[in-house]
Image (cartoon, rainbow, N blue to C red; front, side, top):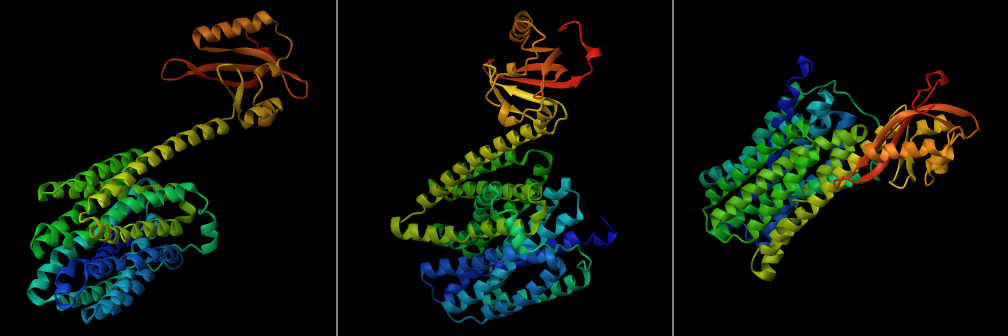
Length: 505
């Protein structure tokens, strides 16, 4: 990495911290705002959730625009525009004012797509998980807002506290203007071409779903906790802010850990742990009437959500390196929307049932389903790798079931024998016999294979053209967990007749 770009990671991370701090203005101050602006429970949930909407939807074009115009331009424009809704909220007089201002605060949440698209350009693939995890520390902005905003609001009032964010925005506008990389590599592929390259990929939608759960849980709890702790446990407003900040801080610092673990180990194994933890944490919340148990459940959710958020963005450059902008944008958009619906759903369930247990159990069930989907992706990747190995080898490969029926062959098999996969699959290898070996020869082969579960030697076979050829053949029996043969794998290549071994001659 060039010395001139060493400041890019800290600059973009700090810019995202500010973005998330601005994104969380309303949720961190809502307990103060509702004292001056009367809000029903439904209006309160809508006000705190609405910034998530635009912040999620805009992540898709933000990822694309970052590839096209660069991170410096995108951060500059975003922070400049945010001056307007932040000032407007500081002057709000009604529910509608909060709704309008909150909607456009969503621009700050969309900035997440900027760094995850830009930063991998500066680092090798083996560091992408860690780098995106460090950038994800920008989530810390939510913790800073929930920690400091209530303290400032109790001293100076919530309107003055909101105006303090204008100063921070001004500082980072200047920082990005002077320090941002003006020569960042650009990608000119059209948006439609990038979408065409990924929208049919099932992995994209599965990764979107995973991020919907992990990042959605992070956003939802960040928005939901301050008011819930005050209303349901009678905790002081500042104390509720501190507890929420603890949740956000834990989830945030777990993000780079998740990215680092994704670099070092199989990301799917990390996700299995993540969704198992989310399942257990959500069940605890559904049956926790006391604040200690509720706290433990929340911290488990925060830890696993943070690990998951970091690990998931390790998968993006692995699967979508050529469409990283649109893929990052879409995945992060779906994740953002995952934080919009839960607070509204929990409020609705509370009004219908008088408690939140069903909502938390729903999270547990969705996380449990995610475990099954991760196992499916892990198995699918292993199968795909096995197929790639078989089809990529220069030696001919033929696989049969225990009864000797051919299940698959590779391109090298066709190149040597002349038979296509369609012609070979479903037949027994005997259709390749040359006629130069008698029945006793083949009986001896199969006897050795059954006893030793492997054999190696030379044998004459016949090509599709009728030409006989000598091949060096190795057969191995593949056993299942019960020790029974599931497949026979034959590997061979054509050799010169002068190499005919005494064993099969």
